[in-house]
Structure formats: structure tokens, C-alpha cells
View (cartoon, each protein chain N blue to C red):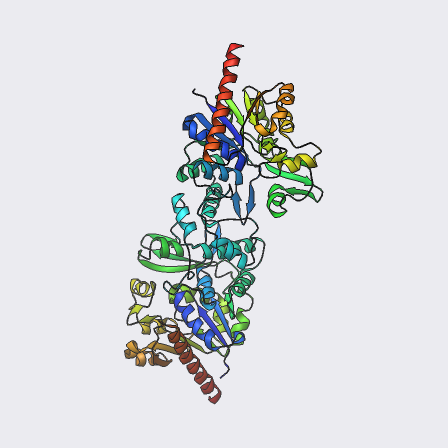
Length: 317
Length: 317
């Protein structure tokens, strides 16, 4: 089975599946297209949380406890920043900080985010291709009962407490896909929607029209980030609920039904197998919770096997 | 003896004497006016090496081994920056970095260097007043056999190896003294030229005309940074030599003779006592090498005693 894969991912959940895929696929056969609408400027630094999580995970240096940041991190910078009365709400470890500083320096010198991401990922030891969705600025704004706010303010500063009313991806209409994104999709045997937040990880990627269009030409397999009505991490379930939608694997499948050919749900959610089939999708029911490295590889293998069967049935059709 | 003091200082040597003075004088009676012509931008950060050395020293957290930077520092940021291929030639510790990041952030928000310096010094525990010489940009350029270069490039990147031909303090004609500098000089019983590099620490301060003018109204006591023909640290002696001047306590006294009323030289340099008196200056010969905290306080006390005697003789005259 030699499948070429383009995987769309946001933060921790997406990174885990991407890691599983990277353990199976050779570097040339996996491109991870990463949400950059969470990117923000903080302390004069250009910070790309999702790119960093994917990079650290594929480089094997992610913090296994938190999912974000680096393992064996130290916090001396942040401690002193706090003593100085500086804004210490965004947690920047000493090692991690170097990535932001170096990225910011290179961007200021005129390098593209695509090039900087590739070079830094290579230096850190990631072997597969990691692409930002765009080199241009796209920013998620969350409309809440406390007004509209930039995503990181909602996510980190307010800890997702405000009630969500909607989302806006500023800049996405004008933004072009980063170099390589359309090529990766066009040459992929399957596009995988990793188990990332539909609203603020995958939707921003799909908000770039050229990417959404390219995806229509390929078979897409998605994996539910919601298991048993709860998000495995992060505010996805809370967002569905506040938007008036029952948070469930079915709701995620419905959200992406235009794009999906097949959807993977957890054994705990087997009740949704028939309803999702009713949306016209193939369904695979399996263990989707990734606690260990083996779990990641297992789910990646299941996803690839499902994708291969789609290709076979396409050929047969 | 209640003396009010304005002390002009650059880096490590100046910081040591300022520390001695701070151990004797109450906070209201000591203002340290600090060279900012060494300041530079690195990695997008506004770095003020001399302000930082004075601040860390007066806060009691300076690294006693190096004289610059902080004690109990860690280097995880710099190590990672180097792994990422970033410019790691300027040594930024993890704790130290927070000072630069927070200063840069506040300056970008429109706060003055004077205000930022005062607030950060207070947070770090320094009790005496630390003033930048100016809130405006003044930059030392070193003319060398390898061309003219910014001071930090000469100092850190080239390790002072190029042959010096002269100095230029870009921006000093237009620069105004920082708020408080002229007031501190005018209300001082004595201005002390700390044992800092004449060419690149004290001359830049005096290159601001309003400061040089204010100094002419006050008695000035200087301390030689050159002992036995050698600089206690840094390139001062090398600079004198390359400019065709014998590096000696006498040369330093001669360099500042317009400003000085009295000069303090080391016992090792007692041969220069008469020649310096010949320049019209009072001379004190004492131990000037500051290895310990006691040495700092001793030299500070000697300096203040000499200053008090100048005041008495002024009154008598």
C-alpha cells in the first residue's frame, strides 16, 4: 500500500494522528497542512501555535503531558517576565521561545512562513513536510457574549469561558494557499481531516477557497474529535453546544458532509454509525482515543486502510 | 557627610563603583547616569548592555564571575537558538532575556527608556536612581582598519580585534539628556566619572552638549580605569595604544582634564601623581582595584571623602 496523504490539522489532536501517519508513511508521502489562523503576535513575536505543536510532535520533542510545547522545558524566562510585570499569560518556555524569536527574525528578513517552517522543522528533526495553510495573514476571531475577540485571547486569556456565537476568519478571502499546498492535495490519494477542532482548526483551512476547491477533487477521510459527546481536548464540544448543535460525532460528520467520503468514529459512538451512513458517508468504527504512541499508529493505520479501500472502490466504480 | 552624587558610568567597572556608592549613600543621594550609546537591536530586541549591567549590579543579582548578566542564569534559549541556526553570538540568558523582551514591548508601546529603566530596576530591586543618558538614539560607531562598524559588532562579534582609528557617536548632536539628568547634575555636590572606558563609555555621555555643559558647573572626581598601563577589563588600553597614546592613568587624566577637579589613581601608578598634579588636578593615590564588595565600598568611601574635601576647599576659597 503506497498511499500519498495530505493531512489537515490544527493542534494537539491533529498532531497525534499526524505523528501516527509519520510513523507509517515515508517523508515523501505525507504532507501536513496546518491551520495558521490561530497565529498571533505576542511580545513582538510571531507565534504559530498549531505549526509549533505539529513540528514538535513530528520532531519527537513535544511535551507528552500537555501535548503542546516541548518536553524537558524550563520556564526561567517566563518567571522573570512575570517578576518584571510583563504579560505572562501565554506560556513560553525557554527552549520554545527560541523558535518564536528565530521565526520572527527570519520573517522580518522577508522569508516566507513556508520556508521558515520547513527550515526550523528540519533543524528540530521533523522529516515529513509541514506546510502552513497560507503565507498570508488569516486570523480567527471568536464572536462571543463578551464581544468579538482574537482567538488566543478567547482561548488562553479567557480560557474559553465566553459563550460562542460564531467565528470569522479575517483575511481568508484574499489569502492564497501556501506554495505546495494545492500540489500536495492534488497529488494525494487521500486527504485526511485529522481529529482537530472543526470550528477553529479545520474550518480556517477550508476557508481558503482554493484549498476547499482542491479538496473537492480528492477522497476525504475524517476522524471525529468528539467522542461520547465530549471533545477529547479543547473547546470543540462547548462550541457546538453554544451554537445550538448537539456535540457529537454525528454533528462533526454533518459539519463536513460536503467534503467527506468516509468518517471514522469511536467505538463509544457506534450508535451514530447508521445516521452518518445516512449522510452518504462510509463509516469506520474503531478505537480513536490516542493515549499512547501505539494508539496513534493504530488509528493512522486504520485510516490508511480505509483510504486504500476507498481508492479500490473508486477504481471499481 | 551628606553628599549628593551624580555618577557617570558605562559597564562593569562603572557598575562596581556605583555599587560601592549605593552601599554608602541613601537612594535620594545617588543618581547613576548611564551610557546608552552601546545599545543595539538584536533579534528584534532593544538591548541596553550598560543600563542592564548597572541595574543588575545595583539590584544585587549581577553575575559575580562575568560582571555582566545575571547570577544563577540558564542558557536554554540560546542553546536552542543555536540549534535552529539563529544568531547566537550575543549571549542572552533565559532570565536576562525577559528584561530585553519586556523593555522592547514597553518601548514599542511608547514608554520612554527612562521610565522603562526606572520601572524594571525597581521591580528587580535596585533602590537608587538609574538614568539613561538620553531617551533618544545615540550609537557608537568604531572606525577601524576593517572599516567603521557599530560598537557591539566591534566588541562582541569581532572581540575588539580590529585596530581602532576613532569613534563617532551617531545622533549625539541632536540628542537631549534624559529627563532628570541635568537636574541630577545641577543638584549634585560632586559628579563622579566612574572607572569606565573613556572612549566608549564616558565620552558618549559627554558627547551630549547639554550634559557636558552641566558638568562644567560642578566639581568632578574621576577614577582611572587603567592601572599599571592595562585596563582592568575591556579594550580601553588597547584603544589608547591604537590611537597613538600611551595607555596610562596619566593619559586618562589628560583625556578628561577639562572636566576634572580631582583624579584617583592606583597605588601601582603613584609615579603619575606629580604629572597629573601638573595638569592642575588634585590626586588621590589609593587601592582602586575592586575585586570584592569591600573593595567597592572602600573606593566609594575614598571618592566621597575626596569629594567632601573639594567642597570644603571650595567654601574656603
